[in-house]
Image 1 (cartoon, rainbow, N blue to C red):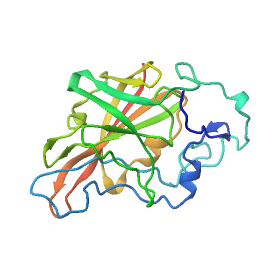
Image 2: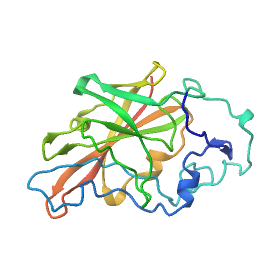
Image 3: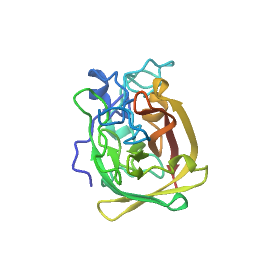
Image 4: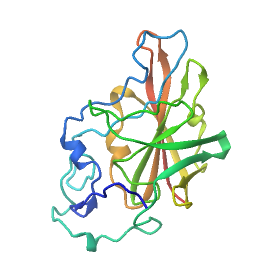
Length: 235
């Protein structure tokens, strides 16, 4: 079981990002390098984006910044059972494996930095799970991010963009349990137009988002210009 504080239900949905979204979180992590001058080769890229306050259309959205259910009526935790196939509570992720693209890596917890952006793993061989969201297997979108490469070569999510619908992602959890997810789609988005609502919006079942950098490498900035986002659902 996770040792983090589980957020209360507001408007009938779990809102793990509520406090973060109401703070100054208008920063998407577009910069993945460590601040040195642009390298001659791509390097140090994660592409993980922080949850941001967004403008939504429709009263029932559960994206950051939303304040209620479709009817606008708060409900109590007892009236919102976990969706079929979702764990009411789950242990923290410790490892992610994707056999078809030879990904097998430890998963560490990630929070937000002082600027409100998602922290990044310091080890290019590790992936990181956003602790402000659900654990993989709980109801909602769990988010795991990782570097695509470094000056030393490919990193943990170097082959993430090769995933296709139907591929299986296996997440091992701290209590020895396993949650499996099936890839629905792989999307590429400019970092200037990161799909915050689609990535962080609450879902009725257990889902997973995997994020890294992609697209063209801009040598003038030392960063890739796009994000690769994998959407998957609980198997």
